[in-house]
Image (cartoon, rainbow, N blue to C red):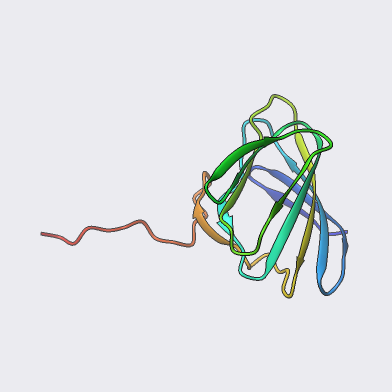
Length: 123
């Protein structure tokens, strides 16, 4: 089973095939993933422990235990844990390509953005 450590917590791949991947994602209290999008996959998030603060497009909302949300392909999104206990979600990815390199980051607390900050011309 593939397991990854990240600054915000951990993920474990539970199952995968050519067009889907199922992960258990644990987000530490007060941490959040980058504001990001994917070109090749959509995601379904099901909260199994804790409370999630979700950004999807222009909307920011809360998802509680036994609730879920859908992140369409190409939508900017972010997962946050505003609580005091670990947030655990099950993520189901669907798409033609599911590699970890299909992440375009727009904002990241851990300085992992793909985009450079705007630099003003000298003058």
